[in-house]
Length: 101
Image (cartoon, rainbow, N blue to C red; front, side):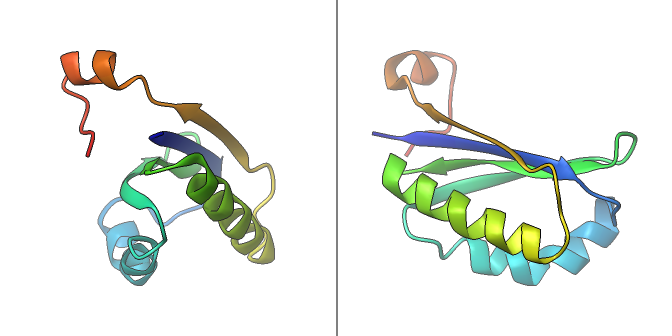
């Protein structure tokens, strides 16, 4: 079953174009994760937060990624990582043009 993972955490920047340049190697690595279909990167410079919304092909892949990514963030000094996992309701999402694969 398709699974959405939502993650956000405190982040001091960079944001915008600087973030795009700095995080490109990480983005290229993330897209190779097992079961990942897509990620939308999120950022809010005003509240000093960043994160993402991910679509995985299954809950197991999403949970594995969450464990690995949380450890990676913690190792770089990030605290207060907030994460939620959701099952996707495909029929309703398709009505609302959800980008499901």
